[in-house]
Length: 558
Image (cartoon, rainbow, N blue to C red; front, top):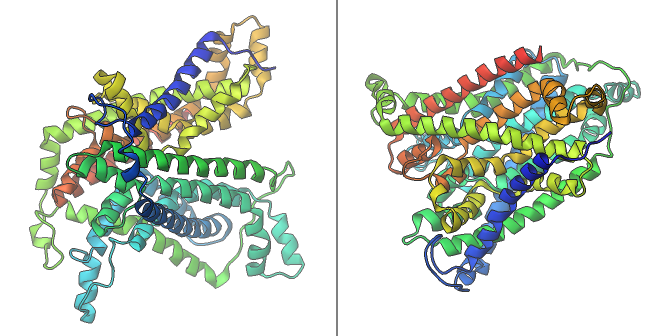
């Protein structure tokens, strides 16, 4: 029996809904304002022409979609192959590979971008220099500052997330379908092509659409790799107009952001429509079965080499490059720098008041965002799944709407909101907390909803029959049973908040810098070894947080 929502639940969910919708209204307002956010001005149409220039926007949307489509193809190809190899075959070391793949998800997303610059830059790339010296080439064979370079870096980075999303489908698939194909005379290759992959079509398509949306809204890769090579996408164009243009063109950037937000919402509607249709495909039923392992024979060493190759390119090579540069007094690809190794960069980072303050700010903001975000996601999920409130689906839709909000775009929307009405909030931790609460709400809601669906309402009904109030029932029954999901949601929001750059670039004030913004600042002034040391410590801190919280999660699950 579902429950009517209490006033506390309704008011809380309404506040969250207001936080999702109100900034977008201010973003639209900014399109027609003649000055920067918070300054006196007047309504004007002067921003519309430059912001919606047909030739420029055609180029931007073309580059954006090519980048997103290419990245999705690369990441899904790798992830699908890995999921098949590690979950369904007898590849040696597959359990170790399965654990190591997820390491990439922990480190900041721009670590790979920075590493590939040192490896594939036409001027300072170590790989280019080595190949030119070895084969006598007159020009560098690779250029990471290109559309192909952006797709390569983003595709490798997203492959770990894609694997995380689709590998359960490979593991849980009923093997009787494949066995039937084999009995009918199909070999392993034909069985995979005709049976396995078609059955997994829903998981593959929904994951691909999600990765496509993530690539559309990506800020880090277009900034680090696209801007130096002149490859402009929507996110880099908005960043140029707000941070690189003198004076800043906030009106033009806001017009571009609003136009791109419309594009994102159209893609989001297509994503939600597609996922709702794919729910009709059911391949896992109540029938008992055990997942089968495909014996590859001598080919298992080829699949092991593929797995090792991916881990080497996506994780070990970039991290080793960053780690090595962090011990150099300066970076160069043309001389032996091993005798110059030093720990001064780490001493500088650890001893820098700015770095220490940024690390503390990042931890504080991420912790507060995770705490508030987990509570907010729980309220919205509970209202959507457990109450009889009229219009409860509206709150569920509101919770999913931020899937279409790029961090940079929503950060710009909040900038207009804060500087127009709540100037005292701008540049404080609470500005970032509000932004992260909204941006990561869909991820948090999905994590909570998956657990809440598994808890039958009869558990809460038993508490109420015994005389407990609704609040007492939630405290004594629902929350203890959902504790693993709550901890897992906290981890997800914490890690995403800790590594978010696009939003922080616009909302972090002079006294509220966070680590991603500081690393970008040092990168822009070419302090490469310092950036490498800061990134290494930054990623190590995230890894430590993940290890501790995962241990806590296992304890709570037991």
